[in-house]
Figure 1 (cartoon, rainbow, N blue to C red):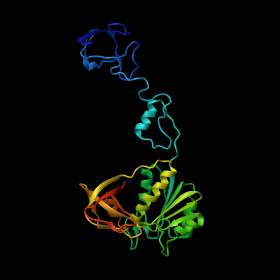
Figure 2: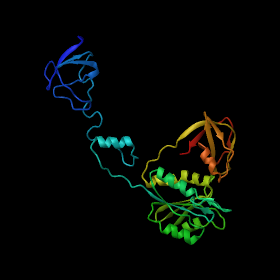
Figure 3: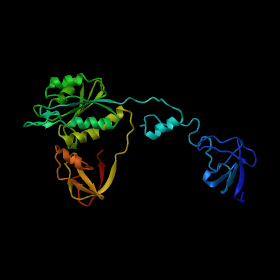
Figure 4: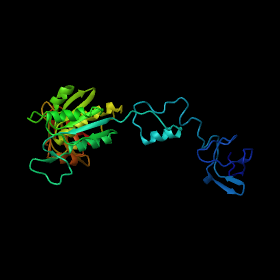
Length: 323
């Protein structure tokens, strides 16, 4: 009503002229249909003085307003977020069926590679990084990486490493994919299963190979680090998500204005590294497939389609952010 304040008696049951205490989230007492917040009242003994207008169902949640009977809570093939798990817990659901995390074996190959634990490098040696990077991304995406020790450029050793890890759901190799005298990986994949593709229309990353062994997808990454990360992002991640029944998610893309011209490679989809500063995409001078630091310095890739020569300074472009 309009006559304010109203005085009610604090009681243990609801009758005319009385009120009861109720905790937030608790069921409503029988015969009650509204709630007043304590800060809108003054308690004197067993008398409660109310200073606000009240109408039926004020501060009351309707039955089923959160989740109704028969409602689908979470659809199949959905990545569970912390808030999703909290919803399940609110319904008293402690166990649900989930798809297992894909087990991905990662096989770094190359005579020139040495473990990161080695203190000094001899002439011609380089630290192994592609396998480490791949393993960390697989873990980040929700998989279980199995990173093997470095395998030498020997067809028999490569074959042995693959055969002994066919319990994995997916195989990633690094190095040995080009056309040099020590590049045996695609041929080994073809001998054990089916080599689907050797050489793709992306730059960097042209020597990438894709295959199937015993129904398991195989990604053969080039040894050059930037080519490897491009192959991992744009081929490996797609295969991994299919294996894990993880729904596709939109790429993290921002728009920016190019600070300088980027030249594409005719006939190839070109991935140019850029750094973003206040809406400006700054092209990085280092563009070689082996310049790993250029990826660390970059915020993302500008992708130039195979049918255009490049992008001009001042042009607005989409930048696919690096995870």
